[in-house]
Image (tube, rainbow, N blue to C red; front, side, top):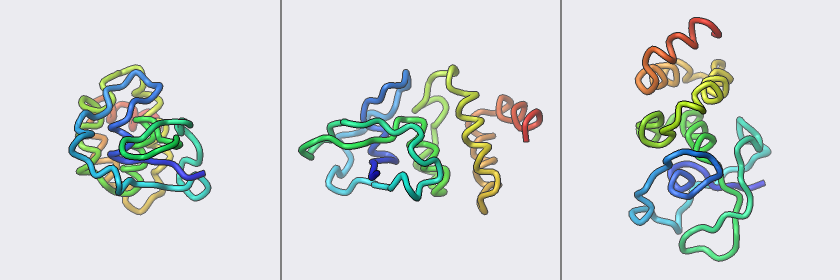
Length: 134
């Protein structure tokens, strides 16, 4: 299944109690980031169906905010994902789920960069999780 992810997904409402992004009017909605669940690292985890997209007719499958950020990390787009914890998620109730999902990327070639990013975003919470689980 094709789905919208990345910064465009962060600028659409999702079912989670997260902040997302609010710069949607500054985005080029004609050039959205689309991936396929069949080849994506997380399969169909966090994909929400039947979402309306600005400047598009019909409905689309869209990554929820957590999935969109995980996709950005997996793709190495750390500058776009910056602010993940305090700006886009804004809800500590999802921290353990995020940590578990991020830890699944530990065999990716750029794991060290992912791990450093998580340390900057989540500080001692990530360090404590890493020490206990990785």
